[in-house]
Image (cartoon, rainbow, N blue to C red; front, side):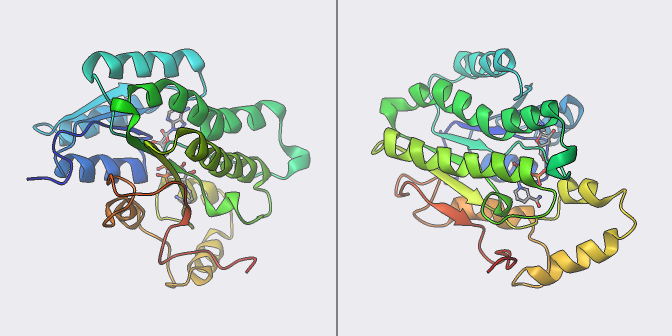
Length: 253
Ligand SMILES: NC(=O)c1ccc[n+]([C@@H]2O[C@H](COP(=O)([O-])OP(=O)(O)OC[C@H]3O[C@@H](n4cnc5c(N)ncnc54)[C@H](O)[C@@H]3O)[C@@H](O)[C@H]2O)c1
């Protein structure tokens, strides 16, 4: 028997580094997982990989209100109630403030923070008897200020603070938490540095800046969700802003 048999778990960013692992782990625990992501090719691949499990993929653009509404509509047709909403979709931008365009700022804010508001508004009413858990992936970049990361950092700080406000409003039935990982080894940091001449130096510095001497791993972030009495469990509490354990970034401490 899985820990999450009979549970319905919506996961955004399902096709990404952390989201994919989350879909695999939640499915392995017996949950029904409607996953959404902008990347339909990778999402469909994941659907193939998880054939035989209770996973379905829907393309969604979290920058678009209409697309989010359609995603919620699809989920509500298939699942009469939702137990867990795990928001892990996100985008990044490495640019000085003075070079950041308005539309770049707007897109990152829409995907990383406004979508959390729209998804919470649409899905909290689907939490059975108003009981459930919402877990938002913020970032250490929303806690600590880094060079050239103002748009990303502001969107992630908004994600963490929105989580606290939602936790206060939706308590006691719906728990809301934010996770703030350090750098985790996925496509996101690799794409971020790939054009830079000093990318190896940057990776070395990231390794050193984490207490475990290396980048985090997606499965370590996802494992937080299964700590006894924590996020996915009805024993969990609202609202934590949790640095993903084992690789809390040391810059600025
Ligand atoms: N990897 C890190 O170092 C790190 C550190 C701290 C926080 N985070 C956060 O963790 C989360 C997961 O990141 P990851 O490392 O798995 O990155 P990733 O790039 O592998 O995955 C992100 C996923 O979000 C999807 N996405 C992007 N824009 C979207 C949109 N408009 N609509 C729907 N889906 C969209 C992408 O297609 C991708 O599958 C993100 O919110 C990220 O900001 C990552």
